[in-house]
Length: 238
Image 1 (cartoon, helix red, strand yellow):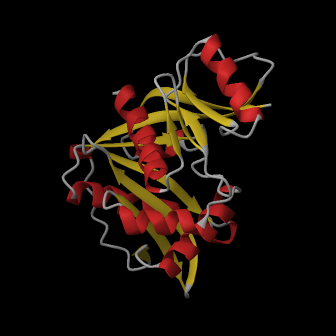
Image 2: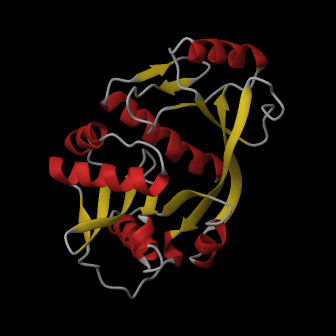
């Protein structure tokens, strides 16, 4: 199951890289170099060996590869003088047969379908997560992908939250970028968005839903029935 959780995230990044023509794929790693956008500017699917890492470090320092690497734990990156640990995320999955929501569709949650929506999503995601999400990347996604669905939470004509559901080649549904603006926190927006994305997953006949949670988020998703199967770690090349 851990491999399926990781695969969903990697497939998402790879698809966005292909859509935007920003992907570099070799036998030893995949990289999406986004330029002006911090998302999904990442090196992943990386062979965990010294030779590959040395190559990636040199490419990144020349500006030919992203500075961020995401790799499953366990790995040999801890203590490497060329790398700085950034964050850990728990690989979690839910059998959708166990999810039954009595919640009706929330009218405040709107799918991103226009260029104006894309700008709103990018601004909301950027403010929620503290890194730049480029609206042109979002616009390319909504124009060119049917299995990446983006949503915003609207209140009084203002976007306060966001979320993505991605259906991979195994039809596993991945929940990504569930975020809320600081002014919208404490209102249950994140919970409403999560439940909406889970309903989207069930309606698409997905059997498994996966996500990557922070240590703080892990108990929240555990209450919804998600189980933890492993961990991803992200490092920055110095």
